[in-house]
Each structure stands twice: as C-alpha cells, then as structure tokens.
Amino acid sequence: MARGWLVGAMLGAALLVVAPMLDTLDTNYLIPAHWRLLLVVAAVVSALGVATLPRVRLGDALAWMAAMPAGIVCAFVLRVAIDVRHDRTDHNLLPFELAIDFVAALRSCALGAAIGYVGRRLADHSAGDGPWRPSWK
Image (cartoon, rainbow, N blue to C red; front, side, top):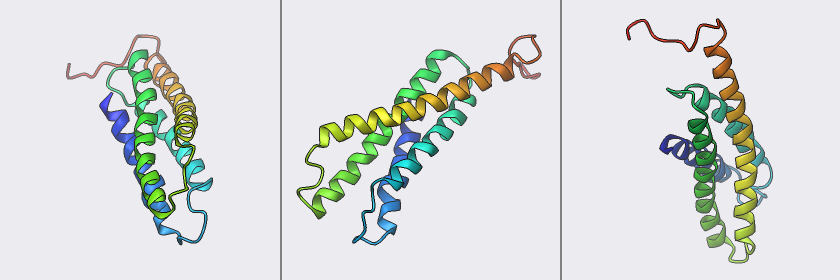
C-alpha cells in the first residue's frame, strides 16, 4: 500500500533526519529520544490511517501496518548516511540496527493498526444495521 509507505517515509524523515539536525552536533542527537517519539507518533498515525481507509478490510489494514515501518526504515537509511559521513565508525552493525528498528516500528504500527481497525469496525457496526453507506450512493 503506497500510502502507508509514503506516510512512514515522511514520518521517518521528519523525526529521524530533520529533527536531530535541530540539536547541536556535539550531543547524542539520535538515540533514544527521537526513536521513542517516532514510535509513539507512528502508532497514532497508523491507527488514524487504518480508521480512515476507504474500505475496512483486514488485508488493507495489514498492508498499511507492513508498509509504514518500511518507509520509516528507508528514511533511517538517510540518517545513517549522514552519520557515516560524520564518523565512519558509526553504525558498524547496520544490518542488525535495521532489523531491530524495523521490528520496533512494525510492533508500534501493528498496535496502532489494530486499534484503528477495531475502532472502525465498531463504528461501522454500532447500530447493528451494517456498514455506513453514504446517502448519495
């Protein structure tokens, strides 16, 4: 799902690439504050994204849940490129970092997608007469 990947890439770029540049370069500008903020924001955005999908199918929610962490990790690669230019010994365990960060983002997005999916299903079936249909259709 292209929307989930794009949203994840924009969140990752904003919180992992741009926001650390606002701090001074002498401080530890990446770990852990920006990742914690990113995971919380990713869960909230994932819940809102799944809740506002045009159709509330489980496959769409799972696609959104898997695409957002991929976008976040792609944006993290930009941060790695900046860090390696600054210090060549940084990120010497990059494959493990990427795997751990992907799993952390996936867990956060899965929680948000589950909340959004359940909320949307409850909202659609609250009256017991099926999903909401707009009056103009």
